[in-house]
Length: 227
Image (cartoon, rainbow, N blue to C red; front, side, top):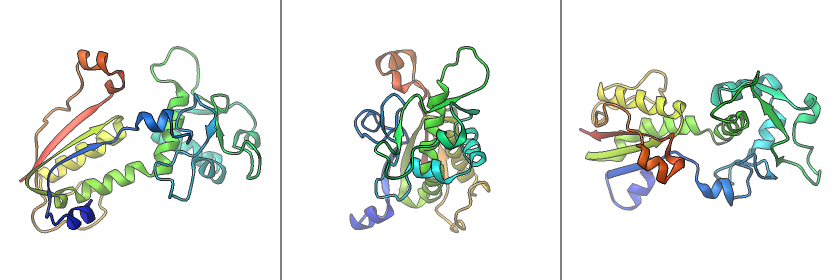
């Protein structure tokens, strides 16, 4: 974004809208395995120029490392349908290599009804890991004040608690004139880093909006202004 602003001859943006959600295109039309409801290659890359697919990650990591990803990003326990050596996508060269299907993984312990299907949590965790979503969000938040013109505003839509926590902590840290120590990618500049939070409480969609757009139900909006 800094490069784009420079190319346009702008010192900063008057407004930035950051939508952290996955699009319907990725879920329904990309063919890259973002949904376990479709039999597609287990790719999950937002940017196909990236080297590692979800299948590569699943085959490269040890089982304990995969569990940590599922627990950290998906907050879900993991249980395989099949023995370890058959749980992963087939080796390269197999006609059905790197395919995603709802019969591949089963997650969670115990029974009962759950609001979010455990396979949804696993696929979300894989997507976050493959695309380094939280690290890139933290990098953006670190650069944010330098991307805004004085008086410029940013609105950020997040869709799960891990994203929202980074946004909330970084906005609060900037309002206090310092970075949150949990995400210190670079030393803070001497001035021009302060933000004023415009949303003292996170803004959520109301019943009418959710009825019109069910995908908005988990949205959280936070906004700030550069001082």
